View 1 (cartoon, rainbow over the protein chains, first blue to last red):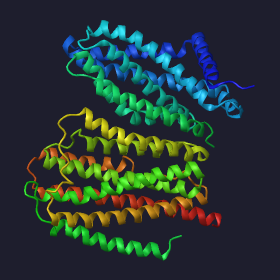
View 2: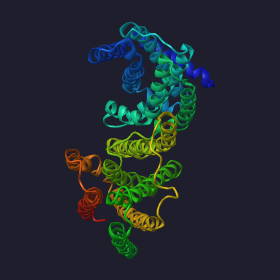
View 3: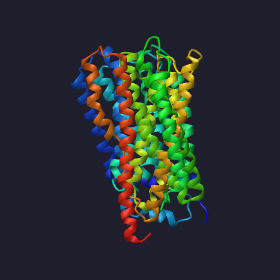
View 4: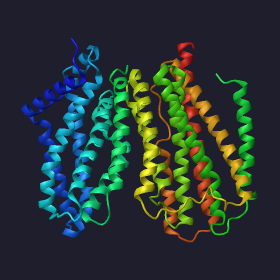
Length: 226
Length: 283
């Protein structure tokens, strides 16, 4: 019996999605958390429409980053509770499929979150983009992937440590700083329409390629670290 | 555990340091605009060079560890990261003191500074990861993180170069540097590199001993702690804007030496503890 990586990945994603659909633990807490961030910042700064166009790039990504961390911790903790990781270690299935499945699952969740939040940002901050919107779509896709791929990897690493949930942000944030800087700058550029964000998009693409490769090469090592 | 070679190296290092520090304080020519404050340079740059070299050692040792799983490469990786963090801390403390005089502000978010700060943060997270993992998996997890860290550094540097405008030009490695200053700088780089090797050597032996008595969970040194001690001292500069430049140099030098000495003391303390444990186990 041999299953291809694609098929295994699809099975993994399907399993995660149906688990999430039944409980909706992660999505609900992520959404509520991001909503709180939006409301609190709006209260704290009370920006005008012009100011908010400059602020929202940073604000949105901070909200997404923190809610992503929340989701990522949950995604592996569930597997640990049910002994899935041990089962996976002894099975002949390639660990890359597990990793890719997790990444895609988290990617879908965070994208869902972003779609909902985008509407809220427009409403709360009275937003209207001045630059080309299609660039924003690319920035969000690439940026989310950059966060999720590293995040999934480091979440797998941090559940192996003693302080589990606390460890993930400590590992993920320093590595993600350049990507977050690029995302924020690109988003601000599109919203204000002052300069092109093509350079940041290229940078994000390179970042995604480099770290996706590194994650795939090292995931097996981390899964089996003893 | 220490050989004659170690003591010989310690002697050479001491000689080099005395010579280099004397040169830096009295022999090197006065800089035209920054006066004595510029002498921090002779502490700042050698520490940076040593820190970067140690991080490279960490990266290479981590790769060797993942490939071979040999204990010595793991010990070398910890050594590189931990001693590198200490030297990097010296860079991050002396830099702002100098900058306060030269640029009028402690911190500028330019490519070099941001990269160094992030480098420090990355390796601190590396040390925290090592501390909080179980003895079995710590080395593998840490080695993987080390590879990510070394991938991140060039990316951080490039992103800062591309995304941030108006960063000051690197003032160090251009031809404008007085040749006499260059010679003193070279001596200082040699001396502090030797110091770095000496401390790393010591730390490496310590880690090997720790591995041998299976006491990997040892107290990690000099994370943010020593920086915190120095923070109030830095605040003094804010109150009085008109200190003579020599004060800045003294502050930088004292900060650097304090960090080195505190770290060595921590290591010696650790060694005594481990030795006791080793003696009890009869190693």
